[in-house]
Image 1 (cartoon, one colour):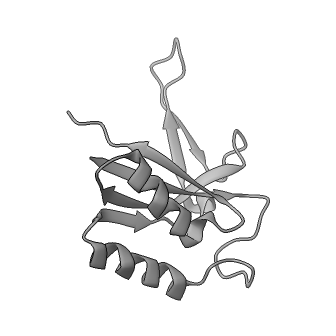
Image 2 (cartoon, one colour; image 1 turned 90 degrees about the horizontal axis):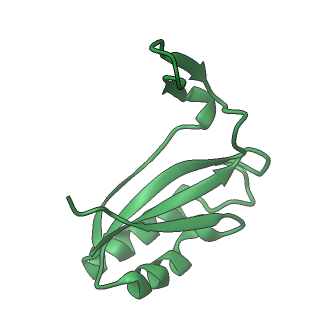
Image 3 (cartoon, helix red, strand yellow; image 1 turned 180 degrees about the horizontal axis):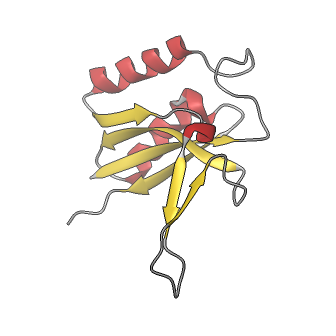
Length: 115
């Protein structure tokens, strides 16, 4: 079964490059662990939410509304992902507990839809 680990960030907390956060080297070592175990199926890192754009078509409208980040609706954002191919949710949880992105933050685990 495939699961995605969503590495969650918070606009009010430290960001990449801050000394209190995991380093790129820690993430690369974690990536290597996943590869060595044969469970890494993909993943990616994202730029800061300030560089993002949101497109929505409000109810009752036909005109798209484009908003640049950061988005006031949420303090939290997805900073990156790891996609794991593991036996079950328990194995995904075990890997998430080892993820540097869980340090002083949160890793959300979601099963990938199989359509």
